[in-house]
Image (cartoon, rainbow, N blue to C red; front, side):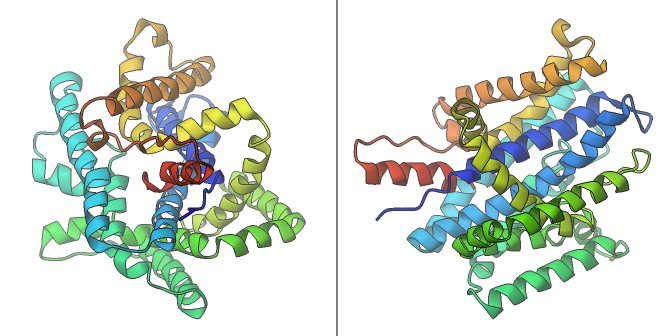
Length: 365
């Protein structure tokens, strides 16, 4: 069976990964006492908040595309997700807790280990892995919505629920564990629209591609208006996160924008290969980049990292070292349990090459 290869997916994931790294670098190194050291970096921080929802969309897209191509097997699904996301989450949560306790000495010992694992705050980026795990729990149900009214209705409903959930008051319950889960940024309903959008994106892939190129001129105007509105709405004294009402409008347009960008990147072979590599390693980069950032900042080479001119060298260094680290870990015995990197498949037959290409997409959802 010939499986379809979605060439733009690694590129989109690479863009999202770079944006996430940018958010964390700018917030960690150029934001002191609630003020950015440089206003342009503050704007960049806010613009790059679009990256995390894109990760949610692509995660759902890849899983759905995999089901469309080879069917859904619950046993395989559970085993695959357990090894590719749950075990890495446990490993990296343990790693960051140890790193903070023994090296950074900033671990709050008043917080129980159970809370760190359940809330995803062993390090500030791990919460999203918990969100993905929650999505996987409901995916066997969500992916069953068929094209047409059921899927469109589910997508619209998810947007309404998402909008309501992020704007409601905090829930107060007698059971504090459940209360913390529901009020935590990792809770699925803060992100449900983006996951459903990813499912719809996969099921309507051909129609989506036809639509965005048929109405390209109109959509480019809409995208331009979106960026202008986003920039105007930025207030570096009142920062917003990726969980933002306007993102329910921004993200679909931004998804179309990066699809357009892909076709330009595909013409530049070197850039295409670099971004494809970053995209295929994106989940590993997401897991390791905070450690890499803290480590680099403690070296003499980046002693002046807080200076604005050091931003680009630091960003490039974090991404490069993260890629190298992920590659090194993946080469270890059972390394794929630590960083989920798709296995390379080689064959002289074109059909097998196509399967291998899809493997680079679907095996790392």
